[in-house]
Image (cartoon, rainbow, N blue to C red; front, side, top):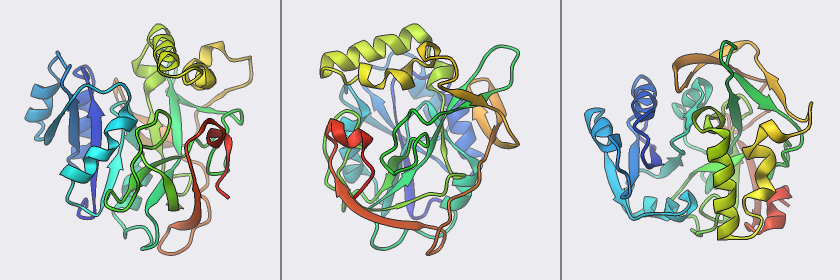
Amino acid sequence: MDAWFTVVIPTRDSAAWIGTLLDHYRARGVTPTLFLDSRTRDETRAIAQRAGAPIVDIAPFAFVESVVRVTRDVVTTPWVLFVNDDEILSDRLFARLRGPEPPAGAQSVAIPRRWAWYEPKRPLSYARTDIWQDRAGCNGADHHWRLFRPNEVTFISQMHSDGFLIDRWSRMPLDAYIVHFEWVLRTKAQRAAKIRRYDRHRHGYGSFFANMYLPEDQPLGAIDFVRSKPTPTISSRGPTTRAAPKALRTSGGGWASVSGRFGMRRRDFLAAPP
């Protein structure tokens, strides 16, 4: 399944859930490579070793975008899928990855992302809102360019980028998405601390995205929490279900081809590609 791509997951002190995460991949025929922050002090390494996951030791990093460039030195497949340790691929995304590579002219692929929300004694849900401006021109879809050719992109170390400049790219359909479990795995206090840490790195780099990190503080009705017809995925508490919306129309082996270069300055957070 993963002959043309390698899944890479940067992580630090994730023993509480990394085993479940790796089990999810293994059940679907994929063995991710872990980029392990050298500050890790819990059992993350031992759990990953028992799961048979390759481990690359990484010097301490302040934000994951700064280590994306390491993929060029350690990955041998044409493509890399760079996924955070609090994210899971939907089964529809796994299915798409079993198919052909993206178009030959594409250097990267935009993948939509859903933010999971959990409350005790209630079904897992996901956030739906138009207040999240989207660089791929689909507000609320939270596209990220996580699939890329490490030998073709130009890497950059900038927070809130994708770790490289986006030039020639394709996109996944909306039903082939990444599920983000930050709201489930981290408390509100931890997420608020993350905002302060990002703001210390550069003014506004945390608070500018507060409407994503702190959904509890958003105006009533700004974010809709949805549960619909399910497709399998995973949470920190084990397998659960997620919803899949109608796909975008695609072409060329299931890939929608798009071109357009743009940088990672603040104004680009809100800009669709030209």
